[in-house]
Length: 251
Ligand SMILES: [Zn+2]
Image (spheres, rainbow, N blue to C red):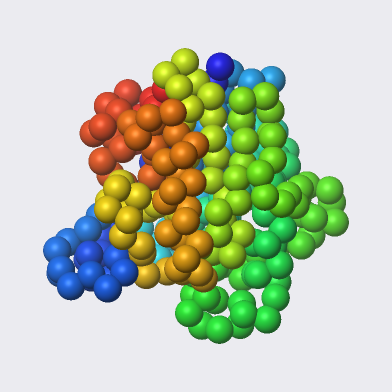
């Protein structure tokens, strides 16, 4: 049985109409930026690598704390993180990879193919990445530190990744068995509770049908809707109750 923590490393303000698919409301919307830590296995497992300070500054994140510092606050040395499950390769999930120098990174083959393929040159996609950090991924692959997976894969007993696509070509979500039931870390398959609960997509997509099907996959995998953990929702701290500011125990 695993323990799961959501670790917040920054915040950014936008509006509902900028974010949700065909949303007319101009209401303010705050995104929280997270990595997720899974303890209780043979070694700590992290979901996503966050970003480094230069990305946070360039992208206008408030209250940035290094994801490595947040992992340390949860009692784990960043150098002891052996596995990082990368949900997808957008800057806020991948550009912090160097903060975890001993990790092997698990990435869906479709995700690698997309960002090293012909569509990455288009500005609507390129603006979502940190290109030098993506180039480092190719080097990591040659060093044997990138594990390319396809579809659903067992990471450790009771811990799996599942390809869903939609938001990006190779987006993967994570299911974790805990004492409370199966937790689903959706990352950006559902940025907010509102996405999965109202079946409302976000604007950033490579496939709308895949994003809609992903909402069904999330609900099928979760032991209960209460154990769905969206990727950028400030309400995570409210619904689960933060242990301390920025650190929330999910299960
Ligand atoms: Zn994101």
